[in-house]
Image (cartoon, rainbow, N blue to C red; front, side, top):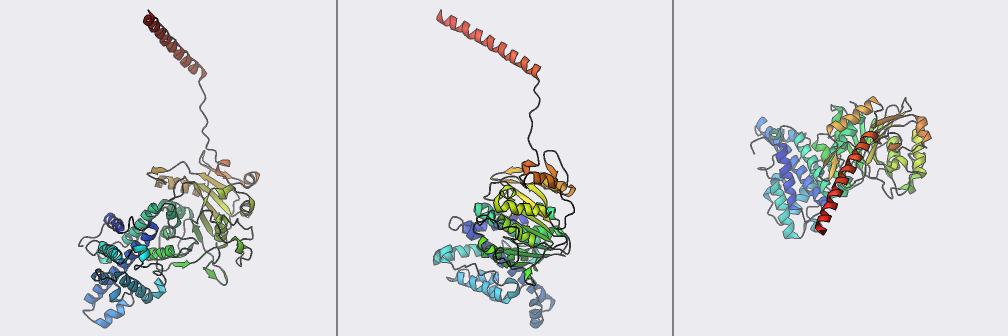
Length: 497
């Protein structure tokens, strides 16, 4: 491949590579094989480019070349590269060869890649079929990533964002194919963009997502900073999704991201001095109304996250919210969380928690979004924004549920919709039929119910009827009806005669 690679072309080639698995493996499974292989090809081409550069620069001085290569972002032994695997693509044990290559890459890059490939098995009979069929599929996959089709060497692609964007493109397509399960690992790009602009992270800040999925939301937040002066933290409960997130961070050049694997609600892992770490910006699209989230452990929670009340065991929405609020820095922390609308008005323990958060002046805004934005979730959702050390006691309500563009099976937010929401939030203003700044007393009068229609009146009243005009139209219709009736009677008479 002599020409620099084009984003659209690479996306199409990668999506076509999925044909190897379509119809035989569920999208939630084959996404892991495609994305891991994309990452392997990226590491190999990165390594090959560096090696070729140093061989020219140091004119065959093997010792100097070796020392230089050992300082690269990733180290790849010769038998772990894509080119080596390509040469072995006809071997009967090609699945084992790929597995061993990934194991050794992990081992040689333990600090960065420890555990990233442990959830993937390229020799799995259950997922890839019996030996003959498995080998055929793996050979097709290897050839789909051939150097003639895909050359990821930095000297060829120029813009490193191309690989990260291709990875994001695949995750988006997999989420679309996976339906409801897709929402478990992917937040739509435009929703991530909206949250990033609403929370507006600044240089030097720490950004945290306690339910980070494949990392798309964290990456949007990081890009919004506008420089490399930030730090990223995340935790993800699903092992395969955690691995995708780790790879996603590296492909976007966020090598310092601290992404940990575990159950945030029952075992938060970002700990400092035996307490929760604190972050400037906390953001999440947690699983909606998670059942069996661990309410039985909340009473003895050593981090005191549930002092305002324990959420219902069948609905973990407020468990995530309380964890996020407990994770804010005390002077200027911000939280942005995507929730189902039930969080705004359900009673019981959730009502008490909601009241406590409002009385403590943590809630800053409630933003209603359109229905059908998320894969497999047709319901409308809302964004809640919380802030530490708020000066005002008002709360802004925005009803953006009617402004979207319909595309095939789902709705999307265009830039104009995002800009309007962000501008309204920044100005913190009341706009007829769109937003309302509610006082604490108004919210209290509504018994701390945050249902948006209680504050933003979007009812379209009928226009006044012009009675005289209507009477004339009725008279005209009656005259026409009388004329037609007369004609019918005349015709009936003629027929009888």
